[in-house]
Image (tube, rainbow, N blue to C red; front, side, top):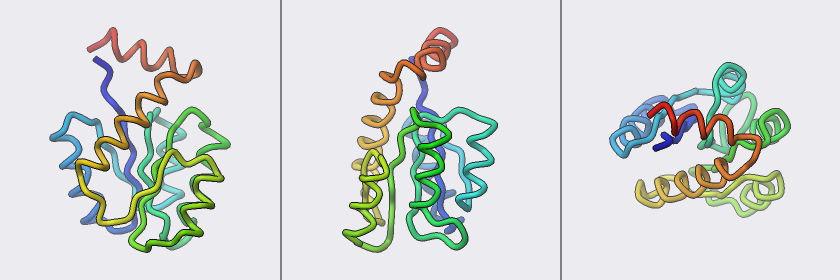
Length: 139
């Protein structure tokens, strides 16, 4: 079975570390980054099916990071998270090709389902087929 590789990006270190641990217990492979630029650096070295990305971060914000991810890694699905229920950010994120948008604190079950749905969409993308197929045959 293919393991979903998830990159969690949030400047709140305790939150993102705790979330990674909880997702690993649910069978996801989770890596963390504390900024948009750090996420882009990691994405330049490793493949991720899904990125869970905070909208409000210092420096490169989540929407700017989303646009860069989608331009450099189009098959990677992005789920936006924010502590601020901001309709404008949701609309802008969806227009920039985010998979979905959740408000923090997101329910872990709901987030897990969204990640799984994004993962399935990612693996249906022909550009990801070799990665998904390789992971399936190696596990």
